[in-house]
Length: 81
Image (cartoon, rainbow, N blue to C red; front, side, top):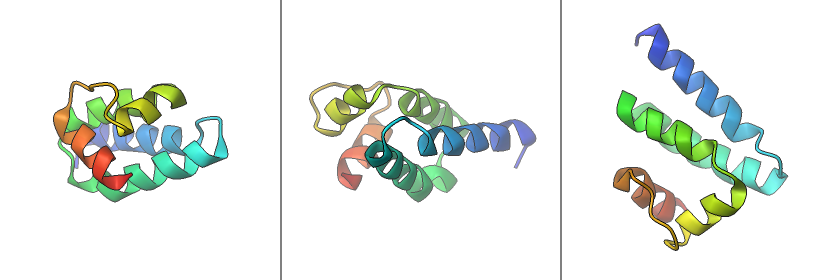
């Protein structure tokens, strides 16, 4: 795995664990850890966008109240929820 991809993975994992509220830290970090190894670099970029969203938007996405540009991640998030 190249170092750029690994750096992105490390950033995503770190951000997923330190979101602000403990509940979302647990939810998002568990979700990220369950899928991160199977994602392409483009999917990782989209996941990075997702983990940097505010908590309310992630909750809306997980309830299908809002669309996210990466349908693959959206489906994974909804199934995970």
